[in-house]
Image 1 (cartoon, rainbow, N blue to C red):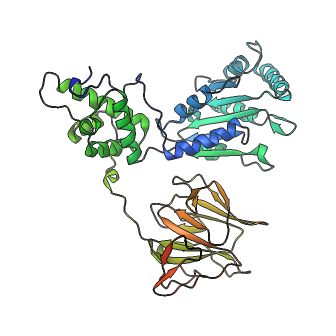
Image 2: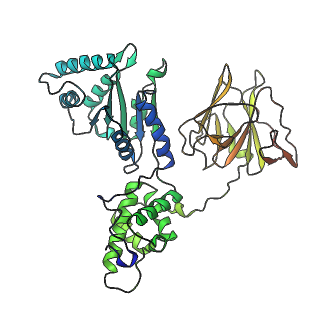
Image 3: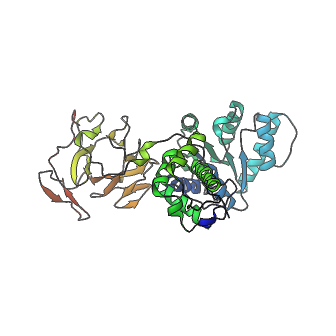
Length: 431
């Protein structure tokens, strides 16, 4: 027994322990992008995030489920062009071939084109992309540009911790779905997800009293030390349980992970403590000054509008007076919401011949319209868009203008009731 009093058979957070597959919100969205890559709807996918966020776990778990798929894993051990080409020839090519780099490249290209002509494509997973040498990166770029009948013949998945590298390598091609590349950042688990993950691991190892062994205050400290990164959660909890087991041997007191013990273990592991994990989520109220519209300019035509509400009050009315407008927390956005519940780049509003289209920009919190999560949505008059903990009502160019006046008023479709205050529409030079 690992901890006899708690019937814990082994340390479930040890490196070789069997644990449940837990996914953060961003990892679930990354899984959707990975499906797009496997189904050839995109040809290149970048997954970024800190070490231990689950990039490799997600990829290995999904590819392990597939059969008859030609996949090769490239890591920084391939330091030269020749080493990379030799590995590709062995894994997805005709096999071991001797020759110079130019000859190896030609043989690989001919083979891959022949395979693609018969409907067989290969997948290249580049792990720890930030540690690759420049010659290997250039060779991978050449491989990504191979085409047959204007369609890619190699599909790429790149895993990296460096988002700046993604920005430099992300291809900016136009020309239809076969030229698509995507980027998804993986973040850590939320506090609730961390609590569920830790206690599920404990129960899976035979612990019937996970709440007493790992109480809520200890869980919050785990979140503060790890920021929800699964790899760090495993290391911290593993060391803490080992310490508890060693100190409780022969004692009569029931073992328990304390905050003092976690502090000791966290410092030994050189983990940074983020006290914001103790901040309780509250309903953040926006003010009119928190909504900014860059370069409002005069309207040339009657534009669609976003009616921004926070809590039960309308705080601003924003005109969509340009064909493409980005909404987010960053000051560079066309529409900036100064709120910690809003991603830096949250949504894109794009005018098309069929009307306005809302596109999620891989935001941390996702994009919800009328209570349903969407990746793209054709907006209709009256649609309710959730932005973090705030809401926006879309009013189409031909929709009935919402009167903003003191007191309470009901929305047009009866989905919810808004407390309306006097806030003028944003115009040129106003915020």
